[in-house]
Length: 65
Image 1 (cartoon, one colour):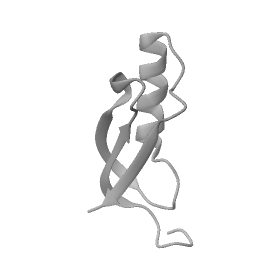
Image 2 (cartoon, one colour; image 1 turned 90 degrees about the vertical axis):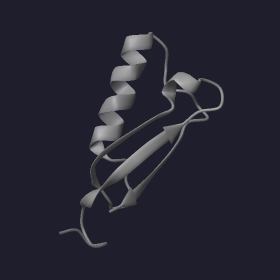
Image 3 (tube, helix red, strand yellow; image 1 turned 60 degrees about the horizontal axis):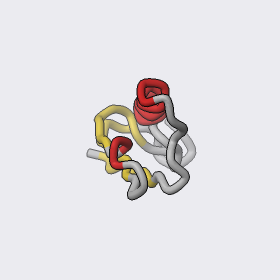
Image 4 (cartoon, helix red, strand yellow; image 1 turned 120 degrees about the horizontal axis):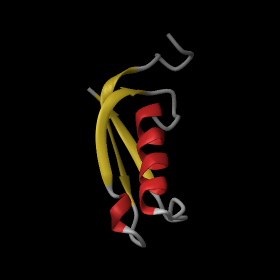
């Protein structure tokens, strides 16, 4: 368990106005004020798949269950 209550199950989402292909969501372990690893992996894979960098205006958030 981390300093801020540890990781818990929850959902995450991403949003970009400039490239809506990066709008996504998923579920997994969230918490600790850091981007969930599943979210980071999804973004990296999406960037490779599309052959474009992750947009500068990308926003992300999560909610614990």
